[in-house]
Length: 158
Image 1 (cartoon, one colour):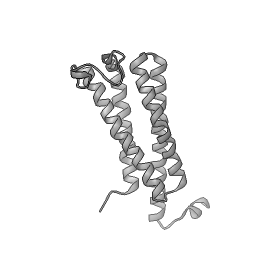
Image 2 (cartoon, one colour):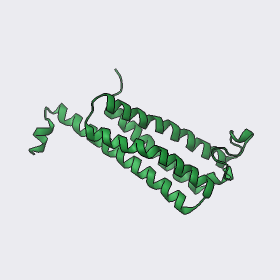
Image 3 (cartoon, helix red, strand yellow):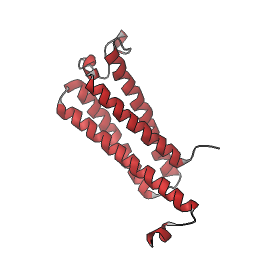
Image 4 (cartoon, one colour):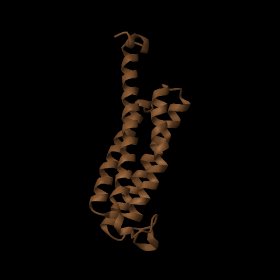
């Protein structure tokens, strides 16, 4: 028995929330400053392996972001190919469209260190998270209505 789509969405949403918390910690300790404006590299051997705790945190944030990004792409693909509700697919589409911007904003926080760069990075993260929360809530709501023998038309009459 495999994981259901709604549970995969929930895991993706929780992963995104954990990534946001890790990003807050990464910014708080100034881990991006360890890269000295050399994005995508950082300090350490060949600029790829962390030499200090802050550079480890920066690299770990990037690793988690990559995993979560692939989870979001996977959710969008599953939703599109699986014929799920168009509202879920559109919400995931918003999250997917925000991913490249989020990467660019993240690079900008390392290169420019400004409050504006950090705010753009955090705002994009919140938009992605909000899209995932909406898609997850909708998937669970639809599943509970299906289990109760109700359809969207029956719910609309409530």
